[in-house]
Image 1 (tube, rainbow, N blue to C red):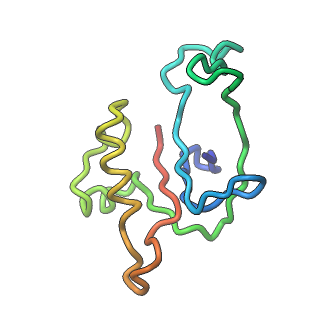
Image 2: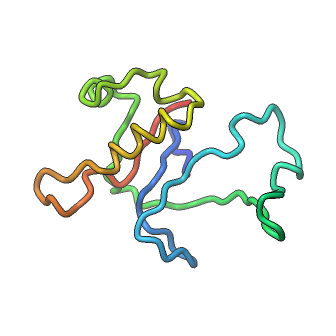
Length: 120
């Protein structure tokens, strides 16, 4: 995830450099519900020996980004602003999967969007 100069989140589906071999990766917030940040938030009791981490990612400026602050983008997908920012995994996964499945109108094999951004 990248926070751009407008303060919006940008989640990318592009492959990351530096060890990730996935063709596509989705990035989401893991710490959004926490009132404060402390060392214990990095613990992963469900994964012995594991740990969460924070990272800064530099993404190309020419990514095809769907701006979910644009009312037209919401209207085209029959979405309401509350569906974007609510903390309901089933709802957010549903619209996210639909967006990732959109294809480039000029190349049906290519993703239409490489990233999604919104303010929260």
